[in-house]
Image (cartoon, rainbow, N blue to C red):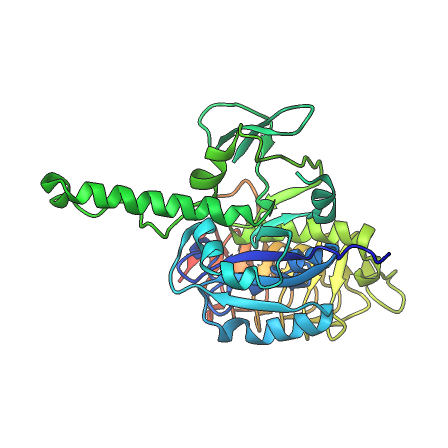
Amino acid sequence: MGSAVEEKVVAVIMVGGPTKGTRFRPLSLNIPKPLFPIAGQPMVHHPISACKRIPNLAQIYLVGFYEEREFALYVSAISNELKVPVRYLREDKPHGSAGGLYQFRNLIMEDDPSHIFLLNCDVCCSFPLPEMLANQFGELVADPVTNELLHYTEKPETFVSDRINCGVYVFTPDIFTAIRDVSFQRKDTAILRRVSSFEALQPATRIPADFVRLDQDILSPLAGKKQLYTYETLDFWEQIKSPGMSLRCSGLYLSQFRLTSPQVLASGDGTKSAIVIGDVYIHPSAKIHPTAKIGPNVSISANARVGPGVRLISCIILDNVEIMENAVVTNAIVGWKSSIGRWSRAEGVYNSKLGVTILGDSVAVEDEVVVTSSIVLPNKTLNVSVQDEIIL
């Protein structure tokens, strides 16, 4: 007897678009937020890599409204690297987290999948996707025995549960029926309202029929109907909404690498290479002086140059950055092609107004300058010390 045909699974990762992510500036001025490197890899790389572990994965789709050309090179490279087809699907306009999924339902269903994973690009977690699939299963209230979701609240004002929605879902194809029903219901309501002359005179403030929100429009009504179940994980979780959060999430991913991919982490004892403390990623093309001291929670990107006596702690150093002798960088993100002069400091203070220090693209910090808890936009030169400032 032949074995049963294995059911296929597809994954959809929502990546948003340029009208969002403004809180991520200046780091998103020259690169889409999903491609910003965290722990040495583009932000979207982490959920994509997690999808690779899903059994019988047929396809990964990225859905957003960035221009296709902005993702073309990355999609081609990651497809070749993981040996899994990755495709970018561009929305013509924002359709909401569920509406965007529905717009491409025919493509998503081409492989006749039994399950569809839906992930958000700006979520940082361990992505227990195979475990969620094996279990078949806002703020959540679930049955302690069956894990059935009994109540779903989006951003509640009072405490109802110690469980939160981590933004990682697995659906059957029935999800498209639920989204379609919401859209049709909206259209019918709009038609009924148009018969009222009073309604016709009111400003058009209603939500468009094709804009469907996953949390409010789909999940909340399904709660308590034996159609929605939770998978509880005690692993780390964060949402990457700001540059400061990207620095924290870089540290979380680096610590996960210690368990899942220790080979990508750097090491060194200060003899032939720099002293490395804790979890550190260093791109193979970066040049690090043996007298430098790196870590913990440091990510150094391609072609960076770190000079003698430099101290790096809890920071992201992007491509082609130069950090000169005896400089210190801590709790900071140093943008592409920027430089930090001799004996200078770029440091963040978390109890400060601005927190993490962020240097945009091509910022030059001259010798013996201290930049503390400041945001510096691209192409600026700093020759005096600043604190708690936004340098425009």
